[in-house]
Image 1 (cartoon, rainbow, N blue to C red):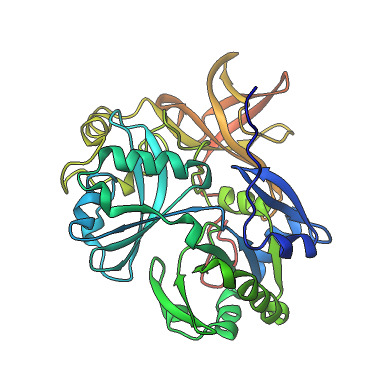
Image 2: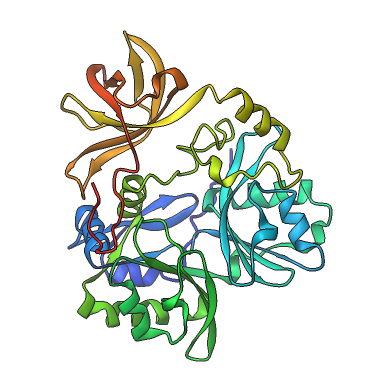
Length: 375
């Protein structure tokens, strides 16, 4: 008989319940999937049009600190950590020796020889073990996930909401920056990053002040159309924006070139775990390729559905939904490179019914300076 581990709760659990959050198990955590009185579509559209407030405290945080921290990270991840200045961030992959993806993550340079690495919730222990196993100086790595709560403020009015609550210069900065701000005497890291395709911020705060910070953001955002958002809206927002989700578009057996995030793989800057395998994949071209799919027939694509051509299975849907912003079905799928050309006709097996689809461009939604969709 195996022991069932109890679900973890973020410091904002009580706030979610009070706001009508419908709590579900996710990656070992009890998280809101949506809120009563709002719902996925309403939360999604509020983020696109005004502001969405997200609890992402389930994400993992690893600190790499000490002399040689930059070199240690550069031997582990695909992007160039040495190119970061203080207060800058970058997206990168943590890879296996065969080029498969351990996880995708964000790295923030907090100062000389001090980095914050943010990883996916379900992979925190796996990532930390991988880092220690391949580190030259494992003593520089510490899993500090319990030291951080994380709140995302996303959408065209996020700047107004943040300015009303936290004083500092992050609101004036471009994407992929991070600064320390003050909130009632406590230090909060404010990053110009996010997972929605909108302008926004991710706030890393001590857990003991998370509820107060959430409460003030929500109250101050009332005049800016703020809405609390759950996992459902977070997923549809990132899918419209073409962002890869680990376990779907990236996995142990899916490499960055297949997932079309090769821009985050810097082969020329030196050796790292998986570099030789990724170099060979790039040279020979990956056999599979992530594509966007649009429905020709009626139907909603979902993750795991088989993609077929002439009745033969050739790939699978990695993520799919009915897009709230575009009011139509959208999907990402992994198919052979030979079938990845725009306009290619394919078939989708939806619970035994064959529906016609076609390869289309993605991202499906791109924010314009006015905040409107470019599609």
